[in-house]
Every structure is written in structure tokens, then in C-alpha cells.
Image (cartoon, rainbow, N blue to C red):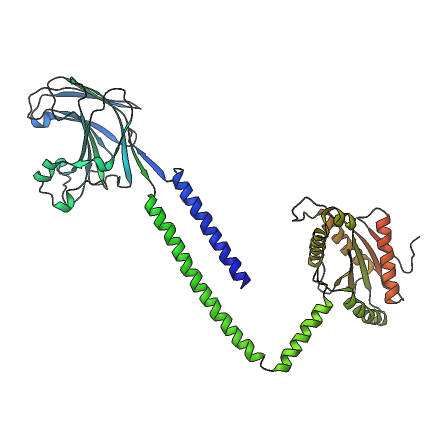
Length: 441
């Protein structure tokens, strides 16, 4: 159950962190996007009252950073005007979807004979239910009028402020469900002189035209995060149900296997025997188990003339570790030390804690030279290992190696122990070898 709870806590922690990160990203503007209309991604042209037999003349100057329209309004047509028409695409029926944008920024300098005179801005939308590619007037007029002045900079308008022109609705007999503003297929943007102009000189300089939006709205983000939590909760519930069913089935099978009380007692006795043979701190074999085993293997080795070696291992300056960092940290060092060596040894080797910071490694069917190679690998690994403690820490060990000759197990142990003592006296972090009945002098 502990493993499941830890797994569940990690999932919840991930969801909390992801939710905070996603919403923080949104609040910091990560979801914002812009669509800037420039001469590089669109086409500009003049439209004036000449299509209505008017006499207005106009010129258009397109530079890298602005578009400048000059026109002389002649009061001949019924509705004299001039405008900049911006085609966003090459095809009138395949425009740009601006429905995911919420505002438009417009920077216009407007020169006219009247102070605070307004310009008209149209976002023309194509929809096949009411528009015809051969009739430009059939495109929907999403319109605003405002007074841009001169050198007043960028003005930002929410797209919800645009209104569909009533005359266009009436003239094209538009149904109610299509009479509201629409920005999902804008193919043309028009910037025109005001509704009531007089015969005079007019100029429109378009400095900047940009649409502001978000890749995902706040409400959509919240819904997506909520959906993520709900889906995760459903998956967790289903997973726990599956695990619970599996455990119930496993418990039933185990109960069936353990029906016999004698079998249960036998299993418990095996468990107690294992605990008696295991060092409670490092979880490797203890000295008591090795002593009994060593008597038997020593006799078998000498009878069959098979090589058998022993490596005594001692952690250097371990007392200083306990004195400096405390016995709790010292216990952690012993556990990590034992785990590291246990991963290096062969399956045939016997590794045990001899006592305190001393460990012993018995290597059956191993001669002295091979044992020394094993000892050197252990010494080098310990000396070079980067330990995952909560402080910088270096660790070394000293090793004594002996190969069994015609001697008892006690004499064998004593020789390896003397070799270890010599390694410590010779400066530590080294290996010393005991040859036959060599004694320390």
C-alpha cells in the first residue's frame, strides 16, 4: 500500500506543479499572439468613388513601414470617398481566421479639412451562405468609426466593438443568425474616409495594423486543466480498483496455500532463520553465519585441493566519521559501503559484516592473484565513488588478502586480519597480501 500511496502522491504533486506552471505561463503572457498586417504579407490598393462615376483622384505610396494614401475628393458622386483596401490573401473566399483574436491595434494619421473627423475601418468577412466571390459588396462589413487624429499613436479596439452595417444586412437580406459580427474568414480590410466628406484634400497614413489574441483563452485553459484532473482521477480510481482486485485474488490464493497451519509455522521459522543470519543494519550476512559456513568450506577446499581466498576490508578513519557527523550518519555510510561492494562481487562470493566497520569477502575457487584483482577493484571503486550523501564526503578503505594453505580457518582469518592491519599501518587506502604463514613484524 505504501508504494501505491507514494505513486499517488507523485501524481498529485505533478498535477499541482503542472497546473501552477500552466496558469503562471498564461498570466505572464505566454499564451499571447499577434498578427501584424504588413506590405510583406498582404496586398494594398486604392478604392474610390470612380466606380460610382465619381471624379475623386487618389495615389498610394507603399513603403516598408507605412502606407500613405492621398486623395482629392471631388463632390460629384452620390457618396464620394477614397480608401485603402488590404487583401490578406490571394483569394477572396480564403481569408484569415481572426476569430481567436480579441482586439485590433490601429495607428493612423488622418489629414482632413475637419478637426476630429472620423475614418471608417471595415473587416470584410467571406461566408458562402451570403457572399459571392464575384460581388465584393457581398462580403460582410464588420465596421467601426473613430477619430485617429495625427501622431496620436496606436489605438486598440476590442473586436466586440465592431458592428455589422445595417444597410448591408437589409440590402443583402441577411438572416438573423448571420447578421452578427463575424471574423472567421477575413479576406479584406478597408480603411476609408469618413461618412460625410466634402470636396477637399484628404490623406491617410497607415503606420501599424496588428491583431492581438491568445493561443488559448483563460476559460479554455481552466477547462483543460480541470479535464486533466478529472481524467487523471478516473485513471487512478480504475487503476486502484484493478490493483485492489488483483490483491484480493492474490490474498485468496495465498490463503488457500497457507491453509495448513504446519506450513505456516514452517514458513515463519524460515523467516526467523533468515533474520538470525542477516546483519540488521547492512542486510548482508553476519559473522555468526559465516563462521559456521567457513568451517565446512575450509575442510572441503583443503580436501579437494581447490584455491580459496579471503579479503578483509576496513573503512579508513571510520571513528572520525562517527565523531564528526554522528552515529546516524555513520550507519548510513556502512549501509552505502556494503551496498557498493555487494554490487561488485560475484555470485559465488560470500560477503559479510565482521563487526563495526570491518567486512570480509570469501572467494571460493579463487587464487591469490584473482583475489588481489578483486580487492583492487573494490579499493578503487570506493576511493573514486561520488556518494549521494547530503554533504561532500570522500571514503577509502584498507584491504588484507590471504589465500588458504594447510591451516585452520582461525589461522586463515588471522593471516588476512594481520595483512589488513599492515595496510592500515602503511598509510591506508591500500592492499596488503599475506603469503602462507607470514606474520606482521
